Length: 90
Image 1 (cartoon, rainbow, N blue to C red):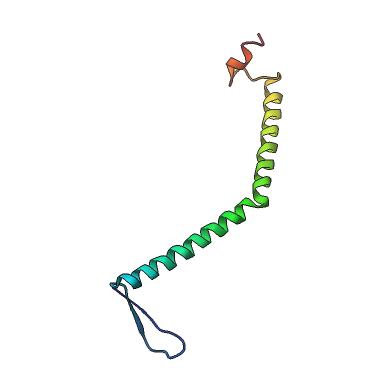
Image 2: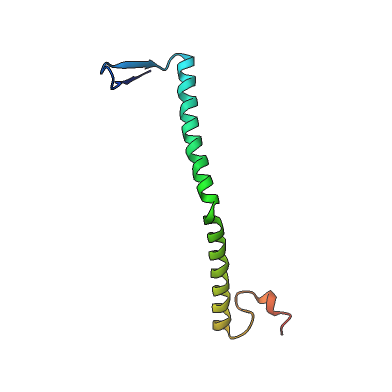
């Protein structure tokens, strides 16, 4: 299998023969390095401030949900969804 590309400098078609093990190894290594670099860059972006924001948002939404459950049930525990928690309250 050949990969054909045309460089800008001379405008002539060049071929890269992928049947040669060295050429194939260099191409695979380059592709893996580029994809791995993009993956690592994405992970480093995701670990920054976004992690604390996601954790804070999750905690806040958990508190809001807890308040809403208390408002709808009228008591401190919801015996309908978690009867084992209210067994000691009876």
